[in-house]
Image 1 (cartoon, rainbow, N blue to C red):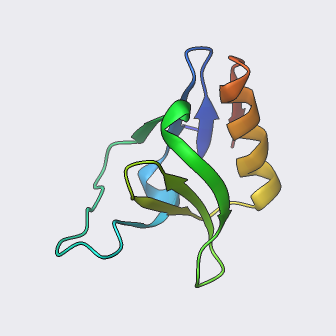
Image 2: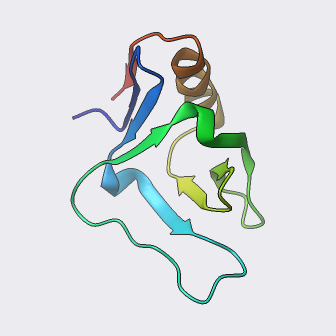
Length: 91
């Protein structure tokens, strides 16, 4: 399975082992992904940048931050492909 991939439906699949941190800042409880890929609708992503620890992070419209262990240009490529409705994957 690829580390991250986009679909023509605008979804981004992130392999669970590629996720460094999944949290909602300023909330009492965080979220944790185990085993299955995390699926994100690209329209729910506010922006892609680095978090305070310098990790590549998808900042979601609902307040969650999904930090992933890939290069920024790879995440940006997947983000843009998902926005454009194109299939792409990074191994």
